[in-house]
Image (cartoon, rainbow, N blue to C red; front, side, top):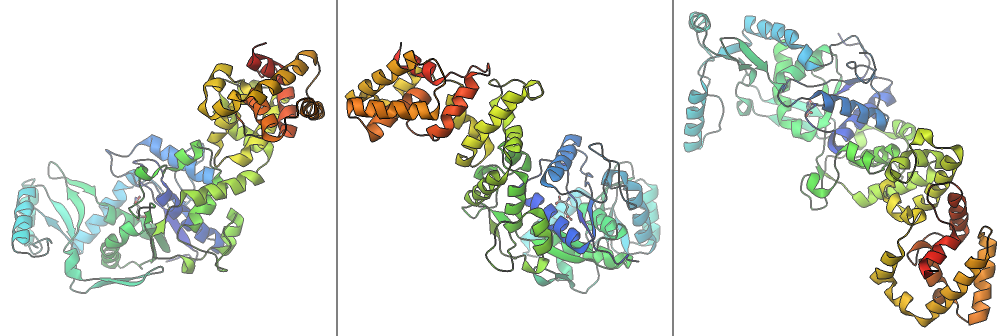
Length: 507
Ligand code: GLU
C-alpha cells in the first residue's frame, strides 16, 4: 500500500563525522524529494551499539541543517520534535519490530535457525578455500527437521537466523546503472539475525533491518553509495520473502581523491564539520557536492543555489563513473559565494577566527562590528576559505618591526639606499601630522616624496607598504588607510599609520 508519494531516506550510522560522500547522498535524496514534492526522511542506523555515539548523531543533524537539508520525518533531536507517522526513526528503538518480523519469516519457513558454531563455519571456510570453491554457507542447517530444531532451542544452543534463498538469480533495476544481476548461489543463505547469548537471538544485521525499515517506511527510492550494491540483492531477497514491493534503487559512484584512490583524510578535509570550521560557506559545499557525479543539462552551468538545484536535479543525469574530489574547484565556488555574501554575514562567520584580537561578539559595540565587517570585506576577495582571513589581516592588529626586518622577503627592499631615504621622508611627515592619514593626505605625501627625492614606483611604494603593513603586497591603500584610521579609534590596539611608521623607523 503505497501512498503514491515519493519517499526517500538518508540513513547514516552515527559512528563518525558526516563526510562528503554521505553528505552528497543526503543532498541527492533531498533534491530528489524536493523536486518531486515528496518526503525526505532521516533514519538513524544505530544498531552497532559499540560504535554509535549520540554526539555523532547530533553532529550529523547539525551538519545536515547547516547545509540546508531539512527532513520531513525523523527522530527528535537538536530541539526538533520527532516528525512523521512511520517512526521510531532510530533503529535501536525498533528492535521489537525486527523481532516480530523474524518470527513471521520463521513461521512461514522463509528463514531458519542455524546452529553452526563459529568453529564449524571457520572449518567450512578453510575447506572451501582449499578446494577453490566459493566461500558460501554450506547449508548444513537448512533442512534440519522441526524436532531437531526444537531440541536445540530447548537445550539453549546459540543460533543465528538465516534467510532461505531460492535458485533464481537476483536482479534489480538501478536508475544510475541499469539492470544489475547476481547469481543466487553468490548470496548463499544470508544471516538475518546474529547468534546471541543464552539461547536468545542476537542483533539483526544491517541488510535485514534496512529492508524492514525501508518497506515499513514506504520508501519508494533508495539512493545511496555504491558500496551498498553488493548488499542490494540480499535486500531484494528479503523484500521477496516478505512479499513486499521492491523500491527503485540508485547507487551513487565512489568519490576519489586526485590520485584516484578512494577519498580519505589523507587527501585533506573530508568531514562536513571540518569544511565548516575552515570557513567554507554551506552554499559552496552544496553546489560542489551536487556537481560531484551530476551535471547540468546544458553541460556547462556550474553555479547553482539550492532552489536552482531543486529545479535542475534529475537522477537521469547522475553518472555511474567515479567522481574525483577537486579541492581547487571547491575553492573556486567558495570564492564565488564569498563574493556574493553580505559583509555582515561574512563578519559574523569570521569573528571566531580573530579570537584574542576582538571582544566577545555580543559585547562588541556597533562601531567595532561595522569596522570588522569593513576589514572582512577588504580581505575576503583574497581568500579561498574564511579561516585564511586572519593570516591576511593580522598586520592590521599590529606588526613586530624586528620580525619584519628579519623577514628574508623584505631583505632586498630594506637594504636599498632609496628605502632609507623614502622612510626618512615618510617618518618626518608622520611626526608632524596630528590628524588622520586619509587617502588624500597619503597621496599628497607620496607625490611630495617623489618630487623631493626622485624615487618612484616600486622603490617608493614597497618600503612604505612594508613600514605600514609588514609586507610589500596587500590591499589598496585607498581602502586600507580608512580601515587603519577607524581601527585606531576603537581601542582594539590597532595603530594609526603615524604610529606604525614611527615604530618601524625607530623614532
Ligand atoms: N547506514 C548505512 C550507511 O551509512 C545506510 C546504507 C543505506 O542507505 O542503505 O552506509
